[in-house]
Length: 316
Ligand code: 2E7
Ligand code: F3S
Image (cartoon, rainbow, N blue to C red; front, side, top):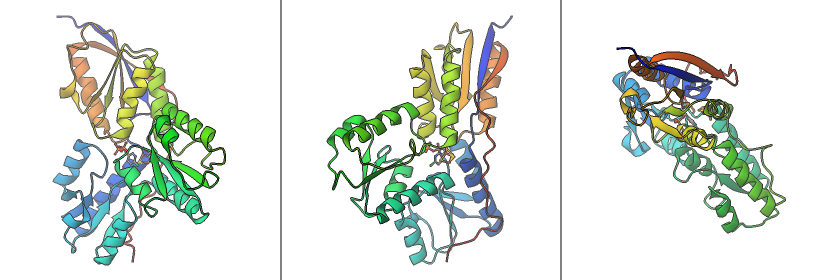
C-alpha cells in the first residue's frame, strides 16, 4: 500500500535548553560522586522520561525536604526554590546542590536588589508553579505580589504606587506578558523592571519558531509534559498563530491519529524539558504512516551553554 505524502516541519530551536542540560548533568555528577541514592527535590525538569531515566540510575524524587533523609545529598530542581529550602537543609546539616537555572537565579538576585532598594515587587507568573513559588520565596511574605493577567493588575493593592518593581517567570508567553507589562506600566508609571520581561532566550526562541511553523503547518504537535509550563505555552502560541490543531504529546503513543486524518502537513516542536529521543520517536511514528518529507524551520541558532561545576561544591 502506498503511503500518503506528508510534509513534516521541524522547529529549530526545539527541546533541551542550557538550563535543563546543566540540571540533568548535575544529578548525573552527584550520582557519580556520592553513589545512589541521591535525592532530588521536585522533578529536576518537568519530563517523565528524564525523571524515569534518572530514577533508574539511583535518583529519588521527592516533593519536600522533609521526605529526604539527612544523611544523603539532595539536589534542588532547575525551577528554583524559596530561600527557606536551602536554609532548612543547612539547619539539618544536609549536603545539598542547587540545580536552579542560572537565568532563574538572575531573577532571584534582581528581586532581592529591588527589595534592598525599598521597592515592593510585582511578579508576573503562574500561581503554584515551582518557579513562581521559588522566586516569590526569595523575599518575606507580602513583598512580592503575584499577577497572571491584566485583570489581576487592575485589582492589585500595592503599598506605594511610586515604589514598585516587576519581575517575571522565565517561561511565559511573550505576547501575553507584553500585555500584562503594558497594563502594569499604565497603572503604575513609576514601576521599574527589566527592559522587557525576564522571559529566557530558550522560551523566546521556541515561541518564535512555533509562530513561523504555524504559518505553514495544518496541525502541530508539541512534545512535552502536561506540567511543563513552557511546553504548554508553545501549544497556545501555535493555536493563536493560526494552527487549527495544536496538541501536547508526551510521546508517540499520545498521538490522536484520527484527529490528524487527511492532513498533508504537520509541525513538530518540543518544550525545553523534552528529550530529542522523544521527538525522533514521534517522527518515526509519522514515517510509519506517511511518506514523510522533513523541512526544518529555523528561526534562530542557539549556542548557550551553562557551566556545570566540575567538582560539586556543597555550600557551607
Ligand atoms: C526550569 C525553568 O521543566 P520545564 O518543563 O519547566 P517549566 O517551567 O516550563 O514548567 O522546562 C525546563 C525549565 C524551564 N524553566 C526548567 Cl525555571
Ligand atoms: Fe533556564 Fe529558560 Fe531553560 S529559564 S531552564 S534556560 S527554559
